[in-house]
Length: 221
Image (cartoon, rainbow, N blue to C red):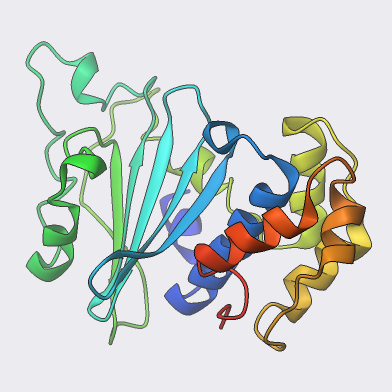
């Protein structure tokens, strides 16, 4: 199980691209920012971009991408590894112990809530694989990684199925696939027509403006 969790993660370049795609689609399908499941901030810090998955129920996965590599901090609020589930509030032993300092320092920001964590995964820029802390998980418990990493949708079909349930809509699979497949091929893969097909009730020009301001249109490489 543990190996499978790490093996199914794409490399940081592809992961970054997938998170941009899903953030852009969330932006189109949901005009209420606080209700979006996937988000992306291109210039979160100098040289660092941030992607976030937030299910609105207390669980989240934050991903930071930098020249040094990528680090993922996950928090499952129902996990027994949560600091809130222990007698003394503290990070579960082993979660951060082996993380390279350059990557761990990226989490040193109040907005990240570094101590609210049940798992951490990282990969340096010159490393061929992902790593996870050597953590002893009690029998019957989960650190939430299987659940939260499952919210990264590798295919347009998976995203469309998720969106149908979460946003209660029926997004065009053809348009979703177009965005997935052309995301790094063309300079402006998302058009007003595509936005209108995905969400007829929104102001397409307003969406395009938000996509551009967020770095999710015209710089999707």
